[in-house]
Length: 279
Image 1 (cartoon, helix red, strand yellow):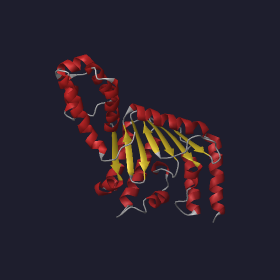
Image 2 (cartoon, rainbow, N blue to C red):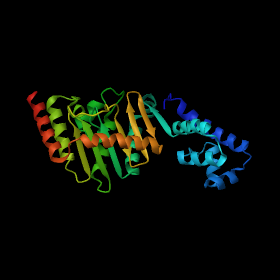
Image 3 (spheres, rainbow, N blue to C red):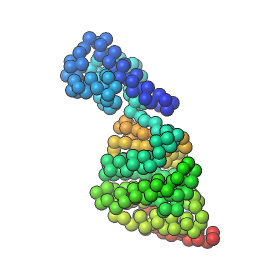
Image 4 (cartoon, one colour):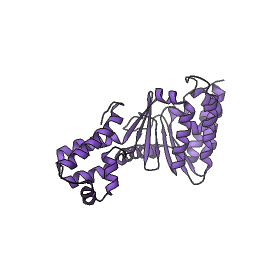
């Protein structure tokens, strides 16, 4: 599925209008359609007026109830998948303020109990030392001190025993020199320390591991209800269960070839020593 970012909001309105038109052409009231597909009349009304973005299972139920042909249903389901996807551009985030983005991330972290982070390029904020966090924001405009503070505050979620975290990093991410060698040594040792938390699994995919799929993007899966994918110009938010399932499968592939626990900490100890030798 391909789309331009501006399609995302428009697709929600298009889907609402299309489903409403199909119902009317079938000669059904909203109440009769609701009974046929096992949804409430208020849900049908909210979907048709664009106040609710329907889940793919709801769209499938509506299309079956209306007797929509398979070839038409396929196009509508593609539109429904786009409608369940959100684009958050970097420029828009900057206009709203980077602190607001940290508040949004904290809300996501509060909304789920299980988290999976795939990190092919750099260490994420939850795992970063203060110096690494500051360096990662060096390209951002304005005073980043409040954002740094908010990022570091968010790290407290790692100590919430009701939540579980799995981080899978490539060796590239561990070794990416965002800060000077001594500070990188501290950062790597910090990863080893976090890996000892009882609710945290931290894995590393070493260079040379054979995998059939390249590590294209940083992504995070929150529980089983939401996934975010990072790009240079923004992030994509997926809420469709099929998209989330695909990201979980990709994550599992890298998790299977990663090293964890003692083996990972031994690797990190060697890497930290490598940085100290670079002084």
